[in-house]
Structures are given as C-alpha cells and as structure tokens.
Image: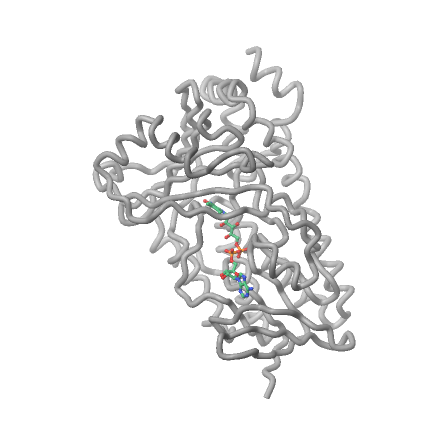
Length: 393
Ligand SMILES: Cc1cc2nc3c(=O)[nH]c(=O)nc-3n(C[C@H](O)[C@H](O)[C@H](O)COP(=O)(O)OP(=O)(O)OC[C@H]3O[C@@H](n4cnc5c(N)ncnc54)[C@H](O)[C@@H]3O)c2cc1C
C-alpha cells in the first residue's frame, strides 16, 4: 500500500527539518526522507550566524541549541599583511553531526514521519492532483504520494535535475575543512577568525572554535576561483603560513581528515518552484556568496516554503508557488551584493585596506558588524564613495 502525506520533504538537513517542524506544527502530515542514516556528518564550517538564530527562534529551538553549542562574541578579520581587527559578533559553533540530529528530532517530535536510507529517484506529477515520489532503499523501490513536495537535497545537482528544477549544474564555490582538538588554545578562545591570505586567493580561510575544544579549520573559494586552485594544497600552505594555525596544529590533535564539498550559492542555478514542487535551502542556492554561510538561510527558506503551503494550499499550486517565489525573491538584493563583492577576494590589497580601515574607523567597524548581524545594508562594499573612504582615509 502506497503511503500518502500532505507534504513530502526530500532531504533532512536544516532546510528540510525546519520546513517539517513548521508544517507539522500547523497540523499537516509530513513524510521526511533522506538517503543518509542519521546521525550523519555534513562537511561544514559549523558557524551559526544571526540569521540562523532568527530561524531557530521561529522554530522554538534556541534554548536547545544554546545547551550544546559553543558561543562566540566576536569576529576577528586577519589580512595578508598581518593586520587584524576584532568586531562584535554574536554567534555559535556546533558540529553539524549534532546540529542536524537536534533539528531532525525537532521535526520528528512534532509528528514528521522520518525515513532514512531513502535515495530519491524521481517525482511524477499525477494529473495535477498529487505527486508520486520514488525512492531507492537498497532493498527495492518505494513509492509514496503527496499533494506537495519540498526538495531539500543540498548543493549536489543530480537530485535537483531528477526533480526537474535544475537550471545550471555548476556550483560556484568549494570549501574544505578539518577538525583539530587543542585544549590549551580553546581556553578563552571565543571568536570566529576569518583570514584573507594569498594562500587562499579567491576566497578566505577560517578558524572556528567549537564544543569540546575542537576547532573547525578550513578554506573556501568563491566565484570560479576553485577551478584554478587545488584546495588540499592551498589548505596545507594556509596552515603552514599562519602563526596561529602553526601553534594550533603543533600541540593539537587532528580528529578528522580534510573533507571538501561544493557550495551552491547566490540563489541561482535552480528554479524555486514548479507547480506544487518547491526547492528549499542550498538546492536553490540559498547559501551566501562571499561568506558561504547557508545554515540560517536554509532554515529560513524551509520556513518560507512551509508558510506558503500553510497559507495558500486551498488556492492551489500556482498560488503556493507564487507566494513562495515572492518571498525568496525578497532575499535577492543581499545575495546580489554579496555575489558582486566576491571581487574583493581577488585583490589582497583591498582586503588589507578594508581590515585596516575597519580597525581604525568606528563607522566602518559598525557597518561590518551590521553586515554580520544583517542589520546594515551591505551595499557599502560596492559603492565608489564607500571605497574612496576605505582607500584614501
Ligand atoms: C566546507 C563548508 C563549510 C561551510 N561552512 C558553513 C558555516 O560555517 N556556516 C553556515 O551557515 N554554512 C556553512 N556552509 C554551508 C552549509 O553547509 C549549507 O548552506 C547547509 O548545509 C545547507 O543546508 P540544506 O539543508 O539546504 O542542505 P544539506 O545540509 O546539504 O542537507 C541535504 C540533505 O539532503 C540529503 N540528500 C541529498 N541527496 C539526496 C537524495 N538523492 N535522496 C534523499 N536525500 C538526499 C542529504 O543526505 C542531506 O541530509 C558550509 C559549506 C561547506 C561545504
């Protein structure tokens, strides 16, 4: 007998789980499917920035996250000439293995029926009335049906193509990360460190402190920069160059191998909606260009899609698709500025200037803080008057 739901969600990462919890809380039946067996790891920097806390607050999960994450209250920017600046920034780090397990439990406790080990094969539209979705379980093909389908499968193009939402297979960014434990340095280390260095031209490196004295260290390339780089070699050069990293590695313990993954950024490359089939999270490119942060926007787009279904389902597929597309379109301006601002990574001279200017100028420091907290218009990164101040003052 074929199982039927109001909504089927494919992918149980932050986007899928946020949507599931929102839909179930409104009384809809939800089937949540993932090809992985949980708890599962996800290659990530593990940093939660304010938009993630905003989404977690909507989901009623802030307190639970606070209990198991590592809080940070600053963001240090280091440039290739050795200048650095510390700005106020409230965030947290939590290993994705734990974050995603918590989010999944948050979906299940509201009533989502979770099926792990289900690899999405295809979705068929049955006369505009409902969708039939097929999964490979290893033991055979399982078929389910639903009125609405949310695709939340992350950056990889294959499932997006199979769902008929793919416009471009290209992922514009790529990043690698490794976990290193260092009990000594972890004491009082409560800032996210971003490093602009010539060893990571076209991107940046990071050092993020996490729970249990484990640091998440990585580098990411944006735009097309990853095509001209060898991330493993760049990572080794990055580690070898920065004194803080040498210290961290010297008496630290490597607790995971270096792992890499693509990032689908810039709200591009995927259709947001096709009838009653909506894409959410990184599969629609909801990860920021320039920074690579995407956990918050994955949850946010999951909630937006759920809200569109809850509010408009009686009006039919077109009304839901239109409401959702509108709400995602409203996020576009910030993504556009971030995408354009990626030029910064090509010019170490500019990032040196930006870091020094941020240190010396209170107004710019306020803007950089506002950028992190999503309270300031990021457009100052692109205007000529903005750069004139940075370069010539
Ligand atoms: C190295 C690196 C560092 C990053 N650092 C940060 C950071 O510090 N902060 C931040 O906010 N963001 C960061 N990001 C981005 C962040 O990881 C993503 O934005 C976020 O994971 C997107 O969430 P999602 O739910 O859309 O997709 P995912 O988290 O990728 O979840 C997708 C889910 O779909 C499942 N799935 C995939 N294919 C199928 C299929 N065929 N059938 C069924 N299920 C399937 C997967 O198993 C997975 O569980 C980083 C990314 C990388 C690569």
